[in-house]
Image (cartoon, rainbow, N blue to C red):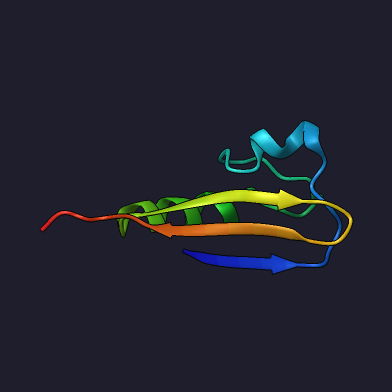
Length: 70
């Protein structure tokens, strides 16, 4: 498992379920592809990307390596 965290603004609860949707963005100039591409690329490499925590102190994403084929 790999944890990636930052101390930026928390992700509001009402959009947490949407952050991995293609085209979803909260930015006026965003494409909504960043997290989608990350998640898809990791899945192709037998890994999982999840939002684990977001609060006033930090936001954490977890990459979990899964057992692949072969």
